[in-house]
Image (tube, rainbow, N blue to C red; front, side, top):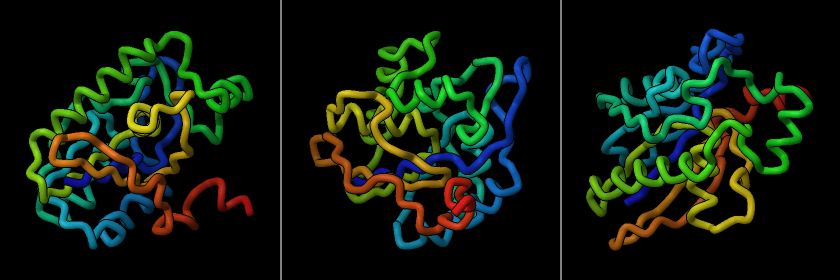
Length: 199
């Protein structure tokens, strides 16, 4: 089976005390609207999402286009799930940017527990799919990095760049072992990514 792991589109910022579960921004809504066409070549049979709003709202246009429901799995929530606020990387402090570049999660996050939670959730998604199925999983940059880190045994947890609405393609063998086929496909949203709008 193949697993299309899609990072959520660009969300709004939330302030301390508002929780780390903001809605999509206007640009994020536009990014999400492009996903049905971008994914049309894949025979998607199931859509799974993190419980966080930015992931569900990103998955919704694909679900609407395919006439599928969105299954929620809390195990593929981001490491910030339950934290006090959310800051898009473009607005992050220099300290947070340097921490991410170094490949580390915030100090108050149990990295091993996070990786284990993500891998357990994805293992169940893979096990529940048929060999010919394609499942779309809409989640978060940290979740995608946890998967790539586990599969490729990278030195750092935060090992790959994952853009808003970027698509990472994983393939599962008949034994359930996952391999990375491609990382962070963004052609469909290239002009809507904040880092490209600055050029």
